[in-house]
Image (tube, rainbow, N blue to C red; front, side, top):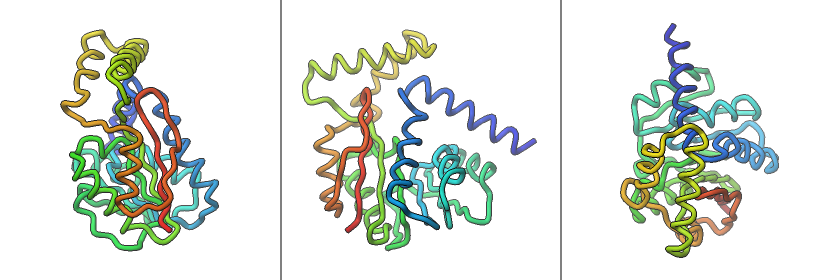
Length: 223
């Protein structure tokens, strides 16, 4: 019963997120596709802000995982992940990205919709910690909300995002409340600023992986 409840909670949470973030499922498919293309096997993987284990669900199903570390500051989310994926090759830690102290340990680190809640300094620390935690040639993949370059673009993109949420069944009030959190409860920066934070954190190789609505996927490789 506990496992069934955990799976239900995960599905319920993910269904709600899909009403909010366009192409939510595609984000995780993109990550898997990149790691496959990097031709890496027997992977050591750290997922920062793991939530209910959506990234692990994909990685453990489609890739050769030696060790998958779930990391989240929210104990209730970590508990759901632990109930779902308490396997011999999984570990679970309660931590923020700013508190990580791993060194040269992981082949892949993911942070999906996590760091936009922090200040610029907190983002920088999270990226630096991720860089330090990677092995040489390791891959850091992050997806975050981003800010457009103009007020006109911001207004248009937020309206489009609100329309998407309403099309997915959210009420006008609920969707308006969500886009109203922009710049108040989370703090998007431009794509260029995202890339500069990653370069300052140590990554010499930084690429745009994916852009849709107001979400961007970025890739960093430790060289």
